[in-house]
Image (cartoon, rainbow, N blue to C red):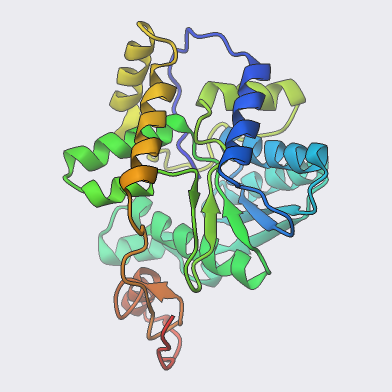
Amino acid sequence: MSVQVRIKRPFPVDLDRYRKRVFSTIRRYRLVEMGDVIYVAVSGGKDSCAALALLKEYVDSAKIDAEVKALHINLGFKTSDRVEEAVKTLANRLGVSLHVVHAKDYLDIEAAARATGRPICSVCGAVKRYLLNKVPRELGATKVATGHHAHDFLAYYFKNLAGRHFEWNFKILPRLDGQGLILTRIRPLIFARPEENEELCRSLGLPFSEVCCEYGLCGAAHAEVYEMIYAARRRDPDFDLKLLGGIVDFNLKYGRSTHGEVRRCEICGEPSSGVICAVCKLRLRLGTSPGLKSPKPL
């Protein structure tokens, strides 16, 4: 679910330091707790692959009474079935159970983008956010984990600053606690770099897709920010982690609830900031929305 961008990386990767940093993040921010059932959102790319592998390794090595499982969303694109097969191989290699959900069972992403004129990445993002909360919750999850890494969050931070969406940056945390029907979301790789994730997967011989979507648009908007990060690291190799550490500490000290006012969608009953959630609005445009449900307070 995180971006796949190829940039020349002149920095060496120390997998021992990387592992210690990720495991320290998991411990410090209580990302894994006794009795947890954690579903890792696995897109098929290197970052979610690394997140699944390291969470499983952490739980096994620390002998924690918690379950780590994988969740894959087949987006319904031309390459999606091939990506799904790679994810099945990965889950089998790591010995974790895998649940596959097909986006088209809820919404045809490509059809919705054509019908509304919205960018396909915007529609895809709305569907993934919806399913990554609804499906694992219905499967008994206590938390959902994503493979977003340090540079994803820094790109998000600068984009929000430029767009004056200051409140959104308070979501940059290793752990976002749930509320009502909203699951707790954890980011074990928040202090990991994309090249480190890739090196881990290669060192373990784990399969991952270079491109998880044939549209290939996910990382294009952030390329300039990544270039800026790598330029700064030529002066200070740890600039990226120091900057992100400062952002996280600031958010922990001065942040507030990241959910805002949460309601229930009047159509599907899922959490929504408005009367109708984003996915049901798209369904209505396509004429595929289910019958109305009585709204209930969260």
